[in-house]
Image (cartoon, rainbow, N blue to C red):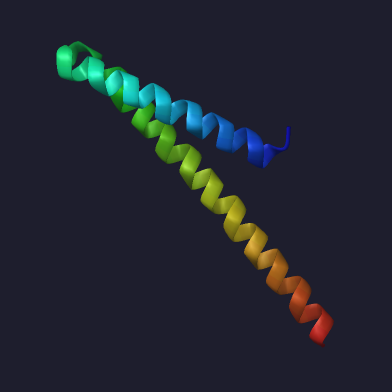
Length: 69
């Protein structure tokens, strides 16, 4: 499995877990810390995903500018 596929798979798993825990929080606020932790982990994973996408775009542009010179 590639690093990108792992990030996507982990992110999907985190979203599903957060969705389930959200229902638990509605029933019992004691689950709120778990919800907050999952929410933070999702934000971190999405930020990592954005960094990889940005690096890919920069590398692609650098490759294109080298060819045109």
